[in-house]
Length: 484
Image 1: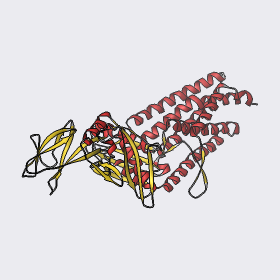
Image 2: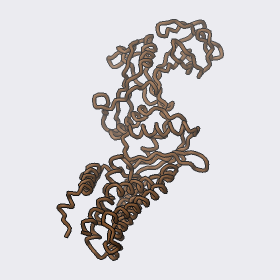
Image 3: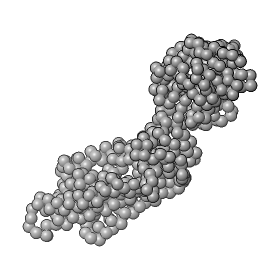
Image 4: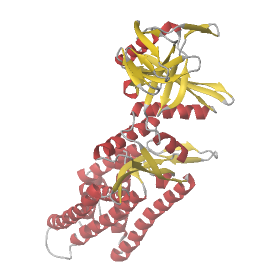
């Protein structure tokens, strides 16, 4: 008879139990209330797009150098992490000699993914300076310094001897200005670039600095950002010579600060006259929304883009598709059924092989334990479980059962007169050789493979290592007690 109390005190069994408890803590299943009012369970396991539904995009880089490919992946990862999506996969894909990026966001809608990644993320804040010019020379005060502006018959202007056509640039007082337009009233518009994306040091998301307000279909969001000292000084220089206007009982400067994202005007904000000529390290950005959710989504997207920075090159979405949450749930159920069926099928074969429940039950429990440990490890390192990972788990189950059969057969006393210790050593020599072979086969798929191939290889390797280090030794100890 097997002494269960003594078995449970064995270090190998204790170690396995400890790791099982750690796996459960990492997975952390918890109840959630569905939209239909029914109760279900969720966990820390990150489910891929195959399991949870979501959106997938194939992205082409206009300038696909190795450096741009790497930087684009880094920016997209930061942008999506900042947006709050945990279940994502971003990987390079080579198609017909060209490199693309495949991006998956589980639980996201196609519109969300498209809006988040199609922006290059070039942010700029500008302040217009208007100059009324005549036939002669006009003095333009900029940062408290005078500059001569001459209107030319061709529509061009001359500033301090430099001739500018429309869309030409000039640098005054260390600040870049663009000649935008000249109106019929001879008003010249110079656009000063005050803030660029690289000047944004921090984007605030807390309730004190970010808020949403409105009602009906008129909603607005606002949040604060901190700027570099150089940008704050540019703001002070550009606003120092602006005149003051009064509106709604408050005093504002004569020009707004205009916010652009990828050259599209996001918002135009009034500047309080209290800020004139001041080094302002923190400014507020705002924008509209058709509803509260739309305003929150727009704010979150803009915050994410500002936090991640601009992409190093323009991108093009060449393909985009969506897997519905319903279809994802069906895939999840099918995956769970596949795992359970594989364990059941193996159990039936094992039963007919040994016809001894004392052997069959430990094999089944060991296989279930391996699955739990793999899921726990995936939850701990935030590895995404998709269909490829499920295939790797099933492969690991098969490998584990093979090893357990080797242990069981090698431990059979009827084979020879070797001691139990030597029999198990011989079994583990075979198991380690088999594990090394499996890992050696999977490593090339892990390093040079793409997409689901890498997921399959990684999960298989993890399953084999868990088996060799934890479950196989524990199972061997159980068999050792059974053979006594």
